[in-house]
Amino acid sequence: MPHPGSRAGIALALVVAVTVAVTFARAANGSQPTWASLHRPLQLHRLAPGAPCPVTTTRRLDHDRLRGVGAGPVYPQAASFSRYDRLPAWLGAKVIWMWPAELKTRPVRVLVRGLRIDGDGPFRFQLGPEWDSAPITSELRLVTTRTVGSFSTSNWGTTVTLLLVRTPGCYGLQLDSAGGTSTIVVRAA
Image (tube, rainbow, N blue to C red; front, side, top):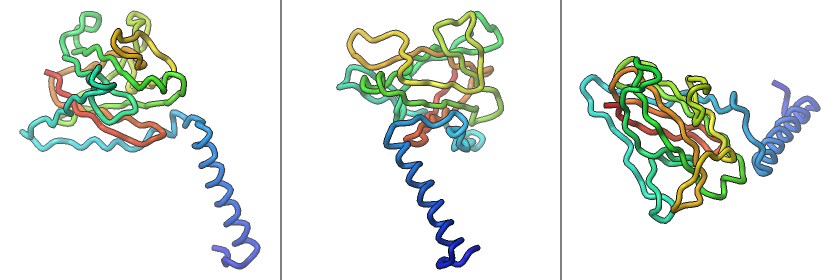
């Protein structure tokens, strides 16, 4: 490590300062993180055998016009899982994701991943509404300027997805965006 007063120490401090300044300038200008940079370690913790599923409660949004789950910046509506006709070995839940109207013109990337927290089993996603051609993936990439559909009572942005699991159980979702990480727990019954 260079001595702090040496030319190498000053140069290193200058490189660090410029890197920090560029990072803050990008954040201030609203530049989007890469999808790879949103792949943070999963913060979904496994449940002890027999522990109850701590399902995330629904909350009121948009002046009580909508109901969603989680801390944002995007919120899924609560949905039930049932057998999925297109993939008979899977349980599916059609989920509408929503976000505040101001994000419809300001792109925010949200990476959604999930896993079963009370046992083993896959968690997959499909971005709609092109159900016959959209791939089934291990992560969901939402961008708030890509709105599909709308609400009659709200001007919030929306898109529709499918959550897919193989068996009933307790599942966790992790949402990563430039603003941070949040988690949601759902039950597939």
